Length: 330
Picture (spheres, one colour):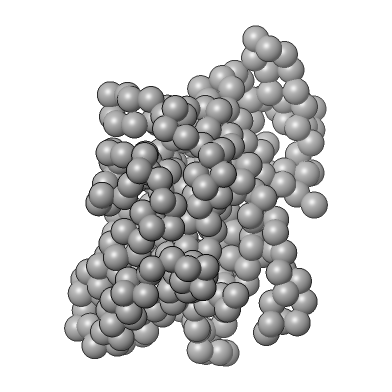
C-alpha cells in the first residue's frame, strides 16, 4: 500500500535510476517510488527539474511547508484523471447560485453536525458543554435561510467560534486556552496547533482530489478566484472536527505536546520540529484508523473516507445521487 513521506531534515531530493533518493550530511536514503503516494517537505530541500519530471511521471504530489510549518504550495503533476465533462459540471454548479448554495450549505451543515458530535462525546463524559452545543445547533438551523455565500460563511465562522471556545473545557489546560481564533500568525499555543493541523488536512484532501476526476480549483463554499485551490478547503471543513481536532485533543491531553514545544519567531509562534513530527505521526495514525461504515457495511480508513466524500460529490455533479455531507454517528 502506498504511503505519505514526510521530510523534516534539510538536504537534496533526486532521481536515482527509478527511485527517489534523499541525501544530506547525515547520510543517504532511498525511497521506493512505487510505495509513495505523496511527499510533505518541512525542511530546506533542494530539487531539480529531472526529479520533478520523475514525480510527474509517477503521479506523486509534493507539498511544501515553510519554516513556521505553514503550507506554502504544492507541486501538482499535470492532472491525470481530470475529465472535461466533470470540469464542465463543476463550473455549471458553481455559476448557478442555487446549485452552488445547495452544495456549500451541505459543507457547512455537515461540519456543524460533526462539531456537535464531538461535543456530545464529551457531554456524555461529564463535560458541561450543553449550552455550546445548543448555540451551535441554533446557528446550524439558520444555514438554509442564508441569502448568499457570504452570509453562509459568516454563520460557519460563528459556529466555529463557539466550538473552539469549548476546547477550554475539553482540554482543561490553562496553557492551551483558546481566547480567540488567530492565524497568520496564530498568537497562542492552541491556535498554532489548529493552524498546523488544518494546513496538513488541506494538503491531504488535495492529494485525495488528485485521485478523482474532480478539479481542485473549483470549490463551492470558498470562492473560486485567483487562489490556486479551493475545493480541498471546502471538503476539509467536514473533516476538521473528526480528524484535526481529535489529534489536538490527543497530543495535548496526553502531554505529547506541551508549551515547551513552541518557540517565538518573527512571524509568531513556531511548533518545534520534534513536536511537528509528533503531530504528523498522530495525524497519520488517525488517517489509518478504520471503522465500520454503516452505509457500506465494511471497514474503511479515515483517509479512504475523504475519497468516498469526493466520489459522492462527483455523483451529485453528474446527477446520479444528491450530495449529503458525511456526519459521524459515534
